Structures are given as structure tokens and as C-alpha cells.
Length: 484
Image 1 (tube, rainbow, N blue to C red):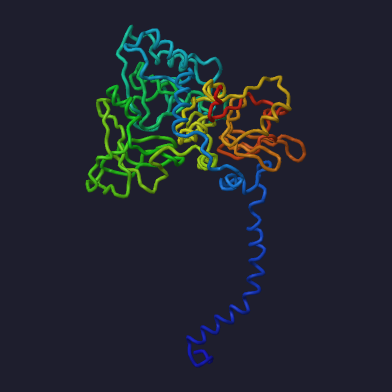
Image 2 (cartoon, rainbow, N blue to C red):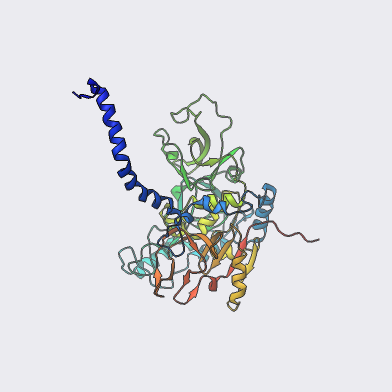
């Protein structure tokens, strides 16, 4: 028993006061350096050239914007922009305008444009060259001779995030032994609710050659539900709706309807709401009041289309309309992917450079082509073109004039402009590379391999040229100038 005040509780209180008095100074001495280091962390360098810790925070860039909430294009302006894209860009397919029945020559041309025999050696995941007999088998699998003279045009909705492939195969192939990230048979991906036109079927019937609005390629038949033209083409126009504004969200898990359970939905996916759903009626065993009730396509056993209700939690990063296109929102949306691993052709349930920028813009309801080669030269965008002989001065003048959201293209790659600071233009981009000069002048190969923030000017294209030297185009999504 403590002798202080003759009470154990009083003794404990006194001991606490004594500990506080005598330990406070040493404790502060220990914590102060750590606190000071933490306070200065925003300016701490990272392992990437000229990038500081603060540069990895979207609020840092938003604070630098003088007109952060300015609406770049309103809903009417975006509708006009999308109409230009659909009317002027040959990379965008009008599914409603496809010929019906499908002429044999048309289908054959579409398939052959993608599924041409490889002109170089390819390697499998073990680093072993793919035998010629396997490549020859793929030519038989595309079944060109089986295309009829005329066939009815069929439409379908994609029911699950699914790969688009060069050939009707899941075989992964690579340009060199030991390199297993960039699968040369991976083209892109489609998402739940995407509409497709079915043009052809593989020899074994397990794959379909489909045209979507932005791409034509092979998809596993199990991921497409075929249905009436009006239902398929009308699905994406239904209202009210929700738009996925997070990098990804998932539907609520449900054992009652596995086909729509924990389904991945990527940024920009638009899903119609079941506004007529009775507020007290369960959806797949769960009360709907804390969720959005959406209609999702599913594939029946016969391959036909059905629409079933599913739940998206209200806590999920979704919106009841497309986001306003503002500089601040462009930064916020792009940073939602920061650190995601690079996924060539939307592999790894992720995305590549052109997929990254197109999904950011899709969250605002803006349509852009799928691939960098088409994005870079699209006549529907506000394009600044460069030639190899253009001077460094012209290129740097354009770099200094970059605005938040501008798309900067170099061969095979696209970046989105964030802003300027410390005399440099900064980009956010999904890259599998990244290199610059080290302190000793040698080339540092970073292997960023994901969505990254970097300055533009120091980045190297090869051993001698910079990204600035290799800019081919800058595309801007903004109001078109009016002619008096």
C-alpha cells in the first residue's frame, strides 16, 4: 500500500503526475525530431527524378489550379464532342449502322485485319518459342472458310469484364524470352453492359469475333449474352443510371445470384437503375435500402440475354450522373489509379496508358478511341501535331502551355498533364518503363510499371532522346473555337 495520503488510488494518481513531470522532457526530446521529419515529409524526395512526396497527393495539384472548378465542357458540350467523335473518327464503330445481313467479304475483312499471321518469333510463359504448328492452328481456328455468304447480324451485352484477343485463344505470347508482362495476343477488354455486334464464331464455337463501339476482336463466348437489338443498344441509354467513378467497385456479394456477385465494375461503367424496384422487396436476399438497385446482363444456359437486379453499395464510389468536367475533377479521377500496376491491353484486371486516360475521361461521359495510335491523330479532338524536324523551341513552347487534362503522345505512349511547378511540366501516366539521367550522367532505368507521376522534361526515350524530343501530338478536349 502506498504511504502517500494513505490510499492506493491516491498513490497511483501521484505516480502518474510524477511520471508525467519527469518523463515529459525526455519524451519530447525523443518525439521532436520525428515530428519535425514528418512535418517536412511533403518536400522529401522520392526515388523518381524531381518527384517529391507532396506530388503524390491530388490535393497538392488541385491547390495549384487557379480555376480548379471551371467547367471545361458542360453536358451539351460533351454531347456535341461525342457526336463529332462518332461522326469523324474511323476508329469508332456505329453498331446500329452495321450491314444486316452481314456480307461475307465484310466479315472476312474485319477478322483478317486483326488476326493476321504473326511476322516475328513469339515466346510462351516459359520462354520457349511458340511452335509454328500452334500458330498455324490459330489460322485454322479463325475459320475464315466457314463465314457464310450472308448471316443475320446478332447483338449482345458483355456480362463480365473480359479480354479482347487477337486470336481465339487464351495462349499468352511475348516478344522475347523472359519478358512476361506484355502479351502480344492481348488487345483490350470489355466491361459489364458493353454492347457488341457478333460478326463471327471460332472453329470450336468457344470464341466470338465481336465489334464494340471502340474495338473489334475475339472474346470468349461465355462472356457475351445475345439478345434483341433494341434491348442491347438501348441498355446504355437507359435512365436513371449510376456511373462508376472509382477506379473499380464491386457489386455486393450474393450466393443467390452468383452471376452478378462481387462483379468488378471499372471507372466509367454506366448501369441503369431499377427505379421501379419495390423499396421493401429484397434483392438477392438483401434489403435494398442501403444500396443502388441496378440492372445487370447475365447469360442464360442457351447463350441468351437476361437482365437481373443486383446491388451496388451506396458506400461505393459511384455517382448518379457523369462527373462535371473540371480541372480539379480530372486530377481527382486520375489519382484514383495511382500505383495500380500497368496492364497491357487491360490485362491483370488493370489497364495500360491509353486505357488509363480513356477511363478517366469516360467518368465524365467523354468518348475517345481505345489505342494511342488512334487517340493521337483523332480528327474529333483539338490536335497539335509535331513533325520529327520541329525545333526544340516549338516543342518546349507547347509544353509550357500544357493545361490540366491535355493528352501528350510519344510513340506508343500517352500521358495526361497535371500542371507546372519548379520549372517543369508534370504528367500522370500508366507506364511499364520510365528512365532518366542519374547524378553521374548514366541512364537510370526505373521500371515504374504502373500509374505514376513524373515530370515530362527529364524523361528519356532511348539513350539519347527525351520524351519532349519525341512528342508526336498533343490532344485537348475543350470547346471548339467558333468561326465568326
